[in-house]
Image (cartoon, rainbow, N blue to C red; front, top):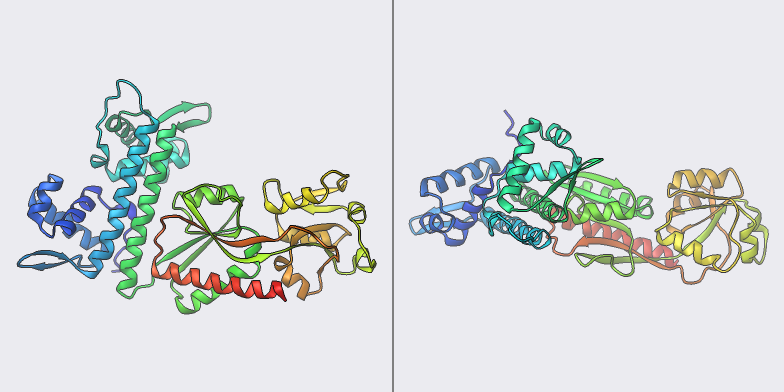
Length: 413
């Protein structure tokens, strides 16, 4: 029978606290005094964790419990996860502070995995019944866990609204921290699997339109040629949605046009190459016959443009600022739709030259010879500031960097 792979939600927080204490003290008796659990309870907690992970976390010696190589790796992840939860409770208390609060000051030490899973489920579903269905438990179970969380913290975390259940600002802060903690534990599970020779990791990529044509396919193919068992998930969507997923541990890396300034201080950006924008039309477009093209020439044609809030849309607005804009506009960020619109008409678009590399090779689309000023933009990676990638994730980042360097060389040529 195949042993079921553990996940971060299956861990008992009390067991994780006991494990961290033993790893730090290298003694069950000393850890017992720190976490207020009996020595047999701690021994049982460690045995349970080792059974879930399928790995020995300690070398049992006459002079104490010394973390094994696997144990040290998991100790680092566990410490980070518990610190995320601790920081989240402090921030929740700051945001939800009120007179007469009746909660425990260090309530992070009293939290259970069931309460944290309920918090995340309600955060995602905005409804106790839907949250219960997602967790596979009864609605009263979720409701009880949520109210226990409020009782321990002394904070108002959930409020009823016309749309269902809304989280307070304190609850949002705690939910984000908890999601990051669970993501950290998933990293720990993956690292133990990697260290024992099992490629069972998963990489979640947030993709903006530009990297989908070359950078991502190249990097993913290169990674899977070396590590074929790695699971890859690519999520497309608006930048703000992808950034939210990244900051909550639901996405590992965001690839695409970088923002200036950096949108928030808990993420960092890394440029891969500088990408210019070009005006593009179908091969054989009437403007290809002109020697000199003016802005007025561009105004006379219909356009397909990306949604508001994107860097390319801002460049389009700047092109025609202070003058008349083209009259017929179709707004979309779908390259498939834009390609179809351009091929079947004289419509124009503003897009990265890199993004239409395949269409140019197939002689479907071609740049219009019009010089654009100030449209170069950095393309690269957005990562959580404190993110610690696994070996497989580090390998994938290197393949992304290599693909970015090749794309940059093409842009120069």
